[in-house]
Length: 231
Image (tube, rainbow, N blue to C red; front, side, top):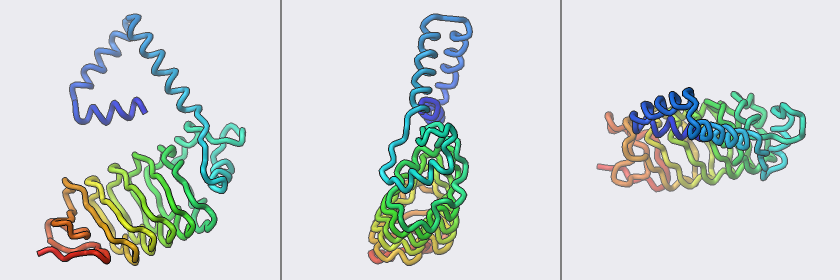
């Protein structure tokens, strides 16, 4: 997390890169203060990676252990989760799992693609903060899902990604999303609030219209039962 936080902050403050280079030089020169700091960072990173994940849903835990328990200890730690690069559909069409907020630890994932379709009992899930794509059919027919936070790392929401998520009541599109495919939110009958974050270069929800509007063409992309067509 320390490394991720630094690089995120460095994007906003480029001068941090110069300060970091200076710090590494002092570390290489053997300055005691910097050696102690490096030792602390290393120890904290190891502690975090070895932390055992506590799963709220034992059915989810069983699937994770069966697929990604490298050490064979019957548990999954944060390091093991971070190595997973694709879910390979192991959760798809599972009608028994109810929550997977521990997915946030699977930071090696760059995309999801149909991985939770027809998980009709799934009520809550937390996506990793670095995921870029919510692929085709990812949450299709997840009728029990009532809310989801889309991280601001996501750039595209693909074909029918949330189709028939009838339990969803609200959705916020972050300003990082620049591509939303057709039917991404089709038949989300419970949806009553749609917000596009300010600063999105492609979409907006002007005048609190509860819809997704393509900004340059003034075209209604997606709406809900509370949509008000803007002037």
